[in-house]
Length: 112
Length: 113
Image 1 (spheres, rainbow over the protein chains, first blue to last red):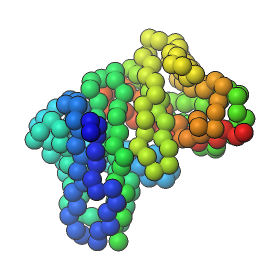
Image 2 (cartoon, rainbow over the protein chains, first blue to last red):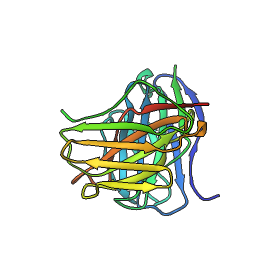
Image 3 (cartoon, rainbow over the protein chains, first blue to last red):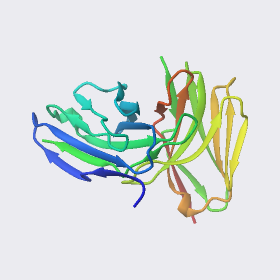
Image 4 (cartoon, chains in turn red, blue):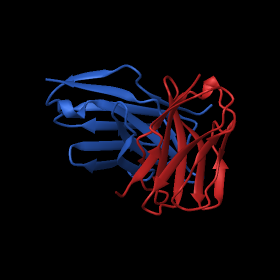
């Protein structure tokens, strides 16, 4: 099906482990984004990408790494998970500036 | 500092009435302002976008106004229905921001029968 898919839907990991959250879109949108959503903070930008091989940090990028070797994929890696990274993570894509974002269903990550 | 403020208290209204949600911002120069709907356990869904040189935008029962002097956007849902119950988020794409959105924390709307 066309759209933007995130996996896994739920993940529990231990402190210090590396975790990768996957994001795949089928529209060939240029822009892709990772946000985290926490109570009281709303959605905060972690990383964004304007095109394949072009990525840049957002507001809360410490402890996260991204790559975008192909237009359709934008994985987010937590290098060494901490409890403060327990959150719901949303991936989004956008065709261009002046267009709305399309969000995935989210990954609920718990770090114990 | 830059801030986007949405009423954190839930808005409860009766079915059939018009719901009005507010988004205020400070120290931003937005090129675009967008509104999203988010249901529990789901990702936000794009509703409307309004540009800095536009005063009003409509889509079916939805209307957005944008006052760059007041630094405020109002989001209206006319003839509201229980199915409109959700959290509504406003988001700014600032001039020179490169298509990055900064989101408010959202207002929860409950439409009662």
